[in-house]
Image (cartoon, rainbow, N blue to C red; front, side, top):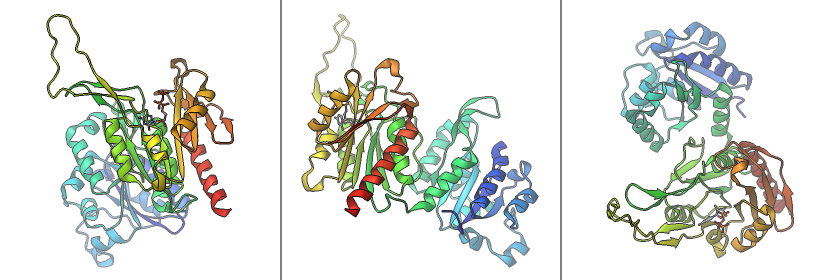
Length: 404
Ligand code: CTP
């Protein structure tokens, strides 16, 4: 997939810069050409010489280098590759890019390029969480910059949290996905719902559930990896946006329904969100106050639209494959079979969400795939594996129905 592709790798100055060497090695193993640019700070962590040895190319560090300009101008360099990858991407380079600063070779190239840019951020957790960094990320995402990571874990500075550079193979996978564009699901459009919904009581309180969004996000990522043009409509979660997926963040079930309708038509819809069944009628515009007499406010609830059932019964606009989840705590398969019929979907993935299974919020899932004809028990596996297996089954389904 990467054979013959060209990547311009911008290495910025962070302790994780040493991983750029392994990234180059992994890309070269796959037949991908790499040209590297280092910021001045990056040269404190890796030497131009080691990158030149691994890339087999001249490494560029300075904007005003006459020999470089004679051989290749910085504008040309910025456009010489199919993709620009910033790894590691410091808070500083993201801030520069978000604000259009161009005061060294790396930032100038990033401003001048007309190629897609993939950034793999790495920084201290507090720097990552700082509103300035988060605002820069939002700006860059809105402009189409792609991101991989950061991962959560122990950091070189002794703290714990999000901010670790993605592993080189994760960055390679993100690059492959960008170059992918083909795969068994290319030409298909998919909509995935994920996470919980928040139903507001007043401006500060809401009703929600424990869904982490891990399963829905993993499914969206797996579909995109197989080449599907994927839209993820998600309630609030801690999960990073999957690479190569268009993400629509929402809060309430009614917003989720609206975003899904707007994203139609689609070939595939997978409703993995834990949608709240009810919303609060006449949500208070002001924060509710205690009445001083110990009488709690009476919350009047009304049913939310059933997104899955609405899409499954959309008549001519009905996607060809509509898949739901059935979160159950008892007689899982029987309840799910009835739910499949009631909702009108093609397949349903039934999972036991009793507290002792650890499914809600956890890493693993035990599911049963129920179709009109069969009920299969899948072994317990990670949510990422469930997503891979489901995406592969979907690809198989389309290849079967389209060759018939
Ligand atoms: N779902 C939806 N819209 C809703 C409620 C549920 O799209 N308003 C979808 C979920 O995303 C899931 C499926 O319907 O794919 C089943 O969700 P579940 O919570 O198991 O079922 P409910 O419809 O809520 O039924 P019950 O709570 O009565 O079991």
